[in-house]
Length: 173
Image 1 (spheres, rainbow, N blue to C red):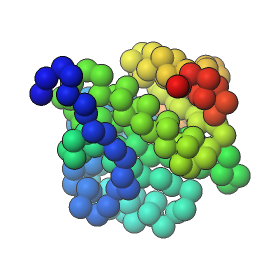
Image 2: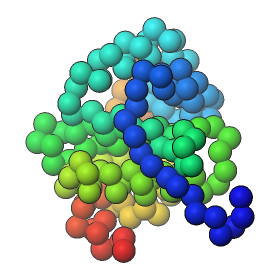
Image 3: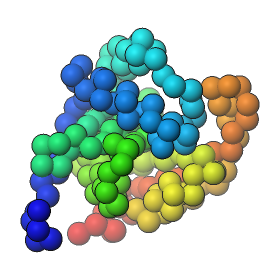
Image 4: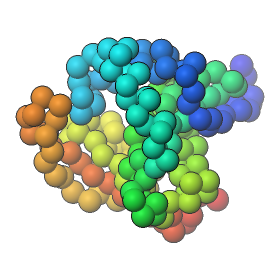
């Protein structure tokens, strides 16, 4: 593909056929090592999670594609007021540099223009400097560091960020 070729990107709802693909990405060490839950997730555990969240209207499970090829996963978990949402995401391991940014911008467009959130909240382990830089580069503001319990019940330091729709609109053409 030449440098001038336009990439066709899209976000679509995750479906049953995506389960194994998303699980393989999620269990990859590049992804898993930066998650709250760091153990390798079994197919059964993944299936139980999926069955639970697809019944929850506050959850938005999305697959990011470029030229029809699935390359990333995004989820939004809306607060009860539906005005704000926590987001999470990961790209297919081994993808080229720049993919995360394209996916992030696409996901934020979805969050603000389709789901109509007023505020999107991001969280990252403090050790994940790449994610911290990523959030800040997209216009998120730091809300500081808090402590939560991880899946192993040990305390984890979490950096929280937020981006308001009005600020997003100022940043994007």
